[in-house]
Image 1 (tube, rainbow, N blue to C red):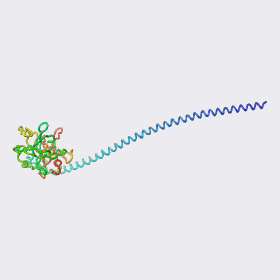
Image 2: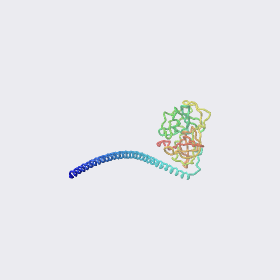
Image 3: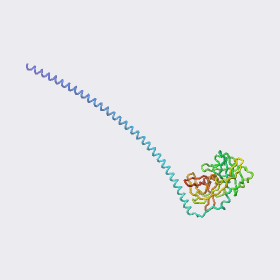
Image 4: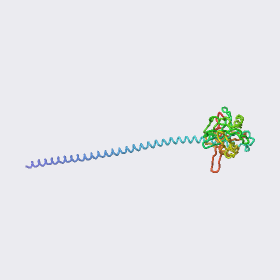
Length: 340
């Protein structure tokens, strides 16, 4: 009887043990699944974080690339500006060196050089008046009688004097300012240069009964030597032309133009005040000699130790706060190389 009780107790123990094992296994399974799910969720979260980090890195890389390209472009532009600045600096240095040498030479030149009436007498009647019809009436300028191989009888003047004209004539006067001839301009302008504001006109037929034959007028200025390309500051200068302030009450009747006031030829004197290097070519000259409307296209003469020379064409005024300076176009720039 006692033996049976022992077996029954043992069986119960086995069942209970098995039950505990099963429960433990299920518990472990549930716990393992939870741990697995947690691991999976953690990996997904890490993938999202990694993906976001990659996107941020790519965005930063793109931003860095754009910045790098902008910096490269700025560097290229800076290099171009540096090259340009260097070239301008070299050009300016060369001009300064040239002007310095000129001033040094000037300091050695004698200071008593003057232009006398005897110097001018052979040439003043070679400066003529250029009279043109324009839209609003009549305009007037000056010009110089000149001999060229291709154009034996020509007038050199400023291009702006005849630029907007519908027709022009030249009036020639003698030493007493009496009109001795009026001539038409033959055909179109022979040649011109807008950069140097210069034009060469061909003298046409006479339109005045009092005209002296064109070949008999004064072309001596075309034989005067050209001034050196850079005359010293302080050199004496005279300007010859037909300025507005010399207009008279008397009139002149011209068939192709109409009635115009007589303007006397004048001579004003001064010195070379400085250089204008703003234009292409050799420097032009600032002069203290009086220049007015109508002087444009006339002639400025200078003098050095070698005598009288043609300086260039009086062209315009530079107006300052309190003073004005006349500007003369350098004859070296004005005349074509093959016509100097």
